[in-house]
Length: 235
Image (cartoon, rainbow, N blue to C red; front, side, top):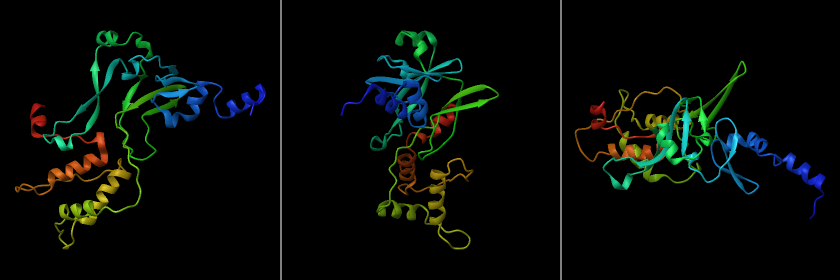
């Protein structure tokens, strides 16, 4: 069906397709710092405005305050190949090295500061904008998004494992299973709530301590890191 120029303009304006800046502004909660398509071209938000992605490496970097960082994918070395998972890390780069990789460093997304706001649902924000007394601050979230399609279903294997891990009893003679289940649920759905620190202690091997760690990594993905004695001693 052919549309008259006037009708086409009204439809584009209604769906925010008349201008790429308007399109991003309306869908920024979804797009955040992702590259997106608009009328056949690729764009992204650089921290202050929407810019066209000209197949440069600029999107691989961010600048926070006066420091440059490159997004790198690493595999955490937990000495278990089966459970290695990719982790996105921000590696510091000096300006001279950045210029060797990016022709126009003005295209690199810029933010005023970092913030750390854990959120594991669709309320997650990579970028936060705050305006106070006319001053706008754009911040970059260090916490990474968690990708899960949560739906009801059978979980017999995990349930059996959690009952094993939390099989000890409290002073009232009750098993710690309900506590453990509540702990994991609260940590996932209310990650900013203050919680006690769980410590699993056993002189025996093959009790499930490492498996529980791998389960937490599967749930919280890039936001879990193994801190072993070597890392603690290196500090």
